[in-house]
Every structure is written in structure tokens, then in C-alpha cells.
Image (cartoon, rainbow, N blue to C red):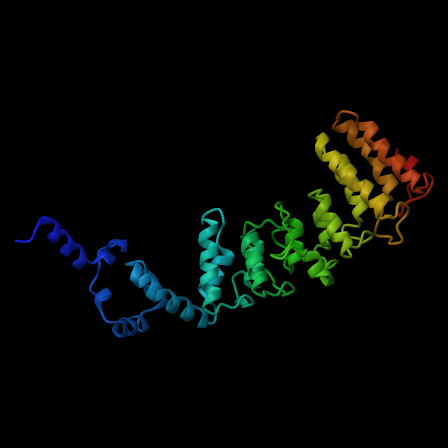
Length: 345
């Protein structure tokens, strides 16, 4: 009679250990030969394939390539669209990136154009959708897989919780530099460490529909490193937005509207950088759409200081005025709206 040890060894040798990796009990379809399983999968819809893949690890491995390959052959592939547009607050980032990896691995097109005729028409690539929903990881992965950063889209910001700085209902298009300039994470280099602002410097001054170029967008985040990167790669420090502001006037305006010392200090550093290092124009702008001069803009801050008093308010504004005067600003010069600094006071 066999010993209990021999019985245990024989039982282990005959045991089907693969059943332990299945999330559900093994089904009869799993036991079919591969050619029959392939025949079954070819008859199922993409939705049914996805459900079948969840029945066992074996089917998951068997069906995944088929599922994504078939999906990518459709006119509007679902997987890459889902990864680009899903709400990042509702789905873990690792799951989103896993789906994107599978989609690209099995033939997904990062430049596929998704089009809808209504009721809210839009045109968008996965890059547009990922950017509009604030998924920087997806944006970077799409770019690494040759997504076109200059692709034009339209109307894709409707009903999306986007992290971009322009209005939610702007009907126009964006590119990757607008996206990176508006991101709070401020990671603006590719996998090799090359700045995207250097890589795509031909787009450096292209504005979004409201008229703001990446430099103007980045100024709102008061990130000196990011702004230096943009300026070094050709950002126009005298560029005029649709609102009639230059980067220097925008920085001064942001300075006197802020109430916290830390933020005002950051804007003061930006103002000094634009004036001292970039030689920003401190007098009347040749474009008559720019109503104030930097000096009249700074003087306007005295009224804000009285309305929202903060520590050393007058001293802070005086330091900006002194800086502008040292760089050649004329206290008697009239702005494009016919005011001098004294008139503003």
C-alpha cells in the first residue's frame, strides 16, 4: 500500500494548478482547443469579447490581442478614445495607461481624428482629449508615440472638466505648448530631458483662440523656470494678447491683485526677470491696443492697495515703479489711452 507521502506526491503531480489563477471557476469554453476558441472569439462582438476576457486569466491572455486589434480596425476605436477622455478622478491612472499601452501595442493610431456631428459637434484627436481632461501622463505617452502636437481640433472642450486656462466654451484649437504652460505639475520635458518648448519652438508664440500664447498662460502660474524656458526658446516678451496686455503688464497686474506675500514675491521676481534680463519695453507700446504703459499699470496698484490692504503695500508698488524708472520709463509719458502716471493717481 502506498504511503501517505507517496499519495500526496502523486496527487500533486496530477493536480491542475492553473485553475487557481482563474478569478472564476473554469468554464467549458476554456477547455476547448485553441482553434475552436479562436472560432468562438471571431463570432463575438467587441463588448462580448471584453466580458469573456473577464471570465478567466487564460481567456484574458488569449483575447486581449484580438480585442484591441479588432477595436483599432474600427473607424472610431474605443480603447484609445476611452483612455484619452475618461475622467482621471474616477479611474486610477495606472489603469488608464495600461489600456493606452494595449491600444498602441496592437495598432492604435495616436492621431486618429474623432468627429461628432451633434448635438455638440467636435473634432479631436486623443491628444486633444487627454489634454482637455488634464491627463499629463497620457499626453506624454501619446507624444512619445508620435501624436501630432499641431493637430487642429474644434469644440472638444464642451462638458469636460479641463485644466486648461482658456474658457470652457472656446470653439478653437490648442497645441501641446498651451497644455504644458497651463499645467500645475509643470513637467515640460520629454523622456530624454529635452524641453517641449525647444522641441516645438515653431509653435512657441501660437495663441489659443482668446489670443494668449504659452508665455501669457504660464505667467498666471508664476513659475520662473517654465517662463525662462519659454523665453529662451523664442517666446515673444512683447507679444500682445487679445485683451491688450503684454507679459510685463500682465505680471504687474497679477502682482498688485494678489494679497499674499509669497505670491507677490514670486511676481516681483518675474517682473525683475522680464525687465532686467529680457529688456522688456517699459514705455508706451507701439501697438495702440495696449492701453496702459507698465508705469501707469503699476501706479494703478495704489488703488488696489487701499482697497485690499496688505503689509508693505505701498513699498512693494514703489519698488516696481523705481525699477521701471531706472530702466528708462518716463513719468510724463502718455499711454495709448492718453494718461500719464500722475493722471492715474
